[in-house]
Image (cartoon, rainbow, N blue to C red):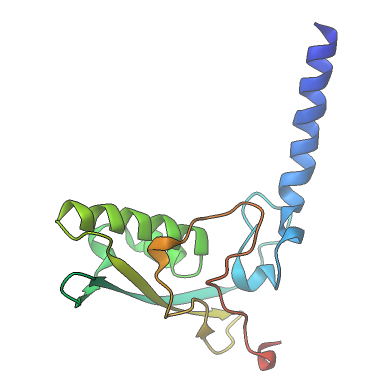
Length: 154
């Protein structure tokens, strides 16, 4: 019984140390990609602004249509999602289910997202050519659909 409690406390303490440090597992600048930023010990003193537009395609008819996220999200949710990749993927999967309910099988969902960090010019964050409905959030690996900022960004 004492061994079980000790093991539980040891695992709990290890998680309390490892989760905030997981941003070191991701490639690139965490300030840019926001990967591993949640629950981290990083100073959140950056000014981040984002803009995004979402396009869906019905593969059966090749019909394209713009998605209006403000129909599903509050202004605050939309503002945060515009620069937070894990929220983008969550919303894309929500949209995928919503479109499937409307009879669109395997919708293709693409996003055009640009981010400005600390009032610098905006640059493309998301690869516009990738169908995000095929992507999943990963806790321990970098998202292959996120673009690195250009060299002049630093």
